[in-house]
Image (cartoon, rainbow, N blue to C red; front, side, top):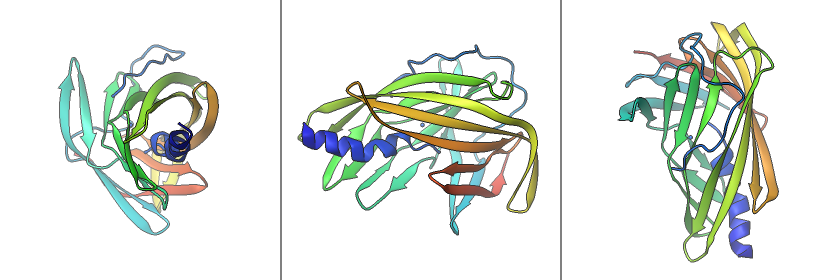
Length: 230
């Protein structure tokens, strides 16, 4: 069990690093969905965004859509890839929009660490609310199970809190001026067997009609280099 806990702590950043999403979202938020104030993340098959970080470009593209009950999920070819010398993991992700709420759904995450392979169950959460005023927040929780071959299973619970920081601003990214931008932050606090296992926080700039144009995480910034909206 101690070995599994050690592996779990090493892989926590895999499941909590955003962007960047199967267990269902068990959380609640302070406001019910309201009418959208615009399309801040256009979702259509073929839409593509290319981000630049430290001179390296990474693209993500919507490759398919799927109807689930009355909702439509749009799947990315790559919304999440993370690696280090100790841990590597990947998962596919989808986005859906319900009025002014934007949900990210991450499928099960396959991970490897120190020669062991395992799986972290997926999750779904509210990534963004476009109708909230500045300083308003939304919250929720989700649970995940991590299982490594030959070991048992450990369950974690993550609480997320989103906060609108600015609205209606203009932002210049890669010499491109974007209007109608909302800046917000998303904080994740994870507990392991009832004890705190750490927290992460990311900050996003999202432009109406474009999508995410910039995000900061762990003192690193990724910026939108180019995009194609159908």
